[in-house]
Length: 416
Image 1 (spheres, rainbow, N blue to C red):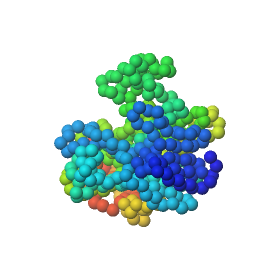
Image 2 (cartoon, helix red, strand yellow):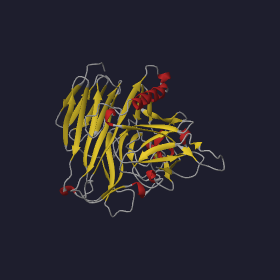
Image 3 (cartoon, rainbow, N blue to C red):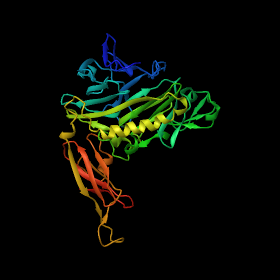
Image 4 (spheres, rainbow, N blue to C red):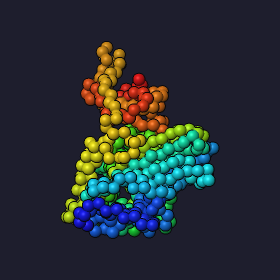
């Protein structure tokens, strides 16, 4: 695919963007990604799964009477498409879904605006969403929200989570009856007769590949023929729930890659986002970056991970992005900064205050000490102190916060 600039083509059922490097196809007006064409691969995404295919935003929700962490699954089919920006350098699409009492019980009571941003000659795309619960909407529980990609099963077999957590993976078929035996819970399957004998006796479980939010910045898959990488990059944790130590899913067998925004994984019902009738709430989730890369030499395919980490660092340095057109996403000049020093008093170690070095310090919604671990409706901003306990928290959205801290080697939570 040669560089031809940005091309947008909207049809009755599909909308296609070709930026000279990658071609992406969405359903119109649903906003489900059906195809990603890149470097000689007609589609990086799977289209033959029995249930879920392609790439999509989804959510899981429950009625307010529910006491469970799982409810109704929804792939968020849009009802209207608008082209927000279209010029030589950038295209931004908006897929919206309204809500009315006519769909009560069938759809989560939210106004949802999903955005996709594509730049000329950039091998990937950005996505973010604005979720809103208004005063005319009923109570409900929002259990999970994420972006999910079901990758081409014939192409992607090698998964990378971190430098020391990467490997060839079993196939989805290995988990089926006859080849796999479910264990104590359905996600964990003992592989008794896998297609590739090397996996026999292993337990496949997507929770084995979880990461803490603070470390969950880039992960994905590598195809070796041709050598192509598919990566999910999350440049900021401000929109995630539960704080920096909250664990969540990354990539796993299918092959699947996820961008997680909120879940109750490892936490339970306390991290469900519970809305009262008429409660007004709005939150921007993302943007996150879905990145593709390639090399010409198959022997160098694993180097795609190093390039993905380089790209992740570049995205982190670019945060907050300047390109989102939604006024709900404040740019750098609209954000604040907090500087300070954290000292620890421990009379058994010293009569003087000690620097709280390597501490995690953050801003989150007002609450009790440690309440940031259960906070799920607002934004959080965290950093790590230096050897002197000094810290700088940058790019803070306007709002009311408490300052929280956790110091390694000292029991308890700090709150200001």
